[in-house]
Length: 107
Image (cartoon, rainbow, N blue to C red):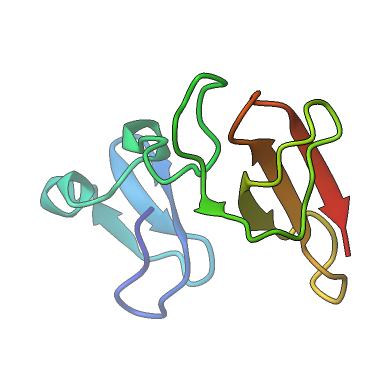
């Protein structure tokens, strides 16, 4: 994206030039500025908390407050994610450290 130096509005491409959508100022495409942009295609998923089913570590370990309904083990990894609107409580996702069973709890 390129913004107009005159009014700050978003510009759009038109035959090798950038044209301001508000005031009509025309500028050549700023190739040096374009190299400093970050594309979402270049992003990695390294910051994603949930990983493969055979991962040894997935979040933080729980205390004794959860029990796996599959094997009865009392320790699981957990992560917290906001899955609903901002005014709703977050959801806790669990993975049993013993058998790998996954479940979620809504507060």
